Structures are given as structure tokens and as C-alpha cells.
Image 1 (cartoon, rainbow, N blue to C red):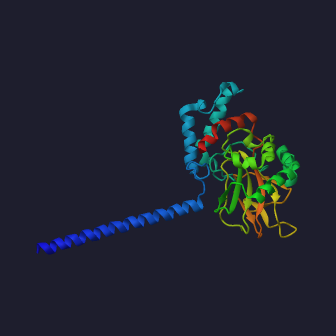
Image 2 (image 1 turned 45 degrees about the vertical axis):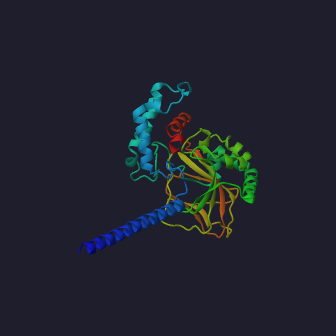
Image 3 (image 1 turned 135 degrees about the vertical axis):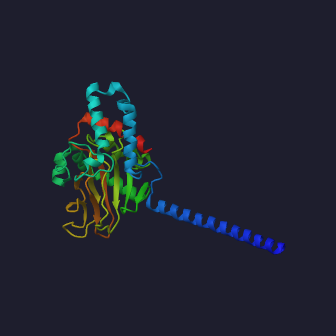
Length: 326
């Protein structure tokens, strides 16, 4: 009897061992599947990326920094601040209040930035700007358009040699060749387009001109072929910026170019064309559409909202510093 019980116990132990082994194998398989999903749909290796990280978490981090340290948390050099202490405190209070009241401020608002909404900025004037108007609004756009041939030549060279560091966004069906990302220079890509890089430094309203601001990006955007309108809409991280596009290599299939455009708030279309500039407030719901069989390439530059004073731009840069995404 004891021998049979012993055999039964040994059999049970063997089965338990196999069961544990099976559990381990299942866990490994699940882990690999999750890892493949992350690699496929989230290509940024940075765990604190401002776009990948939950926007509420990012906003809460900034609020905590400001509440704990006050104006000292973002003023690096007091000698560089030309405003009085009272003016600095007023700007600080305005930004902190906007952050704390973020969700309430977005109620019934056409602008829906994911991180920061700045009260008091004109929205309707800059929601969407056609080519003929954008040149009047921004000197930056005229500077870029005047150097169109040079920019295109450098970009074509990058395409021919296929040596650019592209970042794929499979969800939005596009690829991005960053020159600046979240205010940080992409040195490898900038070296491939040196004249364009130098030109960017001359743009008076480019966010990247305020060094290391989280809001500033500059990149070549490549739209995949056949990107049709869907229910998936995009919102930028702040209402403080206006995003502009310069068509570099846009191939159309009809003379009216009704197939390649940015759809603003589900009804306004801004066509993407060669030698053609458009601008829009990217905190408003928008979507890229490419109803052709060709890839489309545009230069994308983020500019400060025209209503923001130079002092406010400087303070926003110090608060929303690119180190937050590091």
C-alpha cells in the first residue's frame, strides 16, 4: 500500500513539474507577443517620450515641479530675465493655472491639446491658413519658400543615398525624418541636410529657435500611399504652436489635387502640393489623407502662435523644456 502511495506521489510530482514548465512556456510566449506588439506599434525606445507617455502623467509632472519649486524651477539664469519679479510671477501663475485647469478649459473647445492649453490665444484666425495667406502671416514661410530648390535638392540626395534615420509610425501610416524632435537636434539627419539646417536657424518664429523647447519639431514627413479618412483623429500637444507644411515631393493623380490633403476638424481640407505652404493649429482635430498610390513628402516646421510675446515664448521654453522627455 505504501509503495503504491509512493508511486502516486512521484507521479503527482512529475505532473506538477510538467505543469510548472508549461506555465513558464506560456508566460514566455505571452511576453514575446507583447514585446512584438510594442516594437510594431510603438517605435520610440524612450519610456518618457512626450508623445508616447500618457499626457496626463506628463502634465502632472510639470505641475508638481512648478508647485514645489515655484519660478526657481524654470529660471536658469535670473540675469537673462528682463521682466520684473512681479511680471515673472504673473506669467508663472498663468501657466500653472492653465495646467491645473486643463480638462475644464477644453470643455466644448475646438482646441484639444493633449498636454498644455494656453488661454487668450486667437484660435479661429489660425485654425487653417491657405498658401496665399500663410506667406502674409509668417516671414518664416517666405524664407522657406525662397529656398525651396535648395531644400528639395538636399532632400532628394538623402532619398537617393537612403542614409536618413527615419522613424516609422505605423499607426498614422507615415514615416518621419527628424531634424529636431521635441526641441532636440537629430545630429545624424541634420548633417545630411546641412544647408537646410542652417536655414532653420534663421527662422524668427520657429520654436526650435528657442533652444530645447518640448513643443518644437522639424522633420520631413512621408505619407504612405492610400491613407484614407478614418475615425482616428490626431491632436497636438499644445495650442501654442502652429504647424506648417511645405510640399517637397507631392505626386498627384488629378489636376485639382483633391486627393492629398490635411483634413481639419472633419471638414476643412488643406491641399499638400509642391512649392505650396499651408499652416494650421495642430491642437485641433486633424488627419492626413493620401488617396493616391504614391508616397508624399513634405517639410514640417512648428512655429510659435503669433499671439505669444517673445517673453512668454521664453518662459514657456523654460517650463516645457525638452529634458522632460529625456
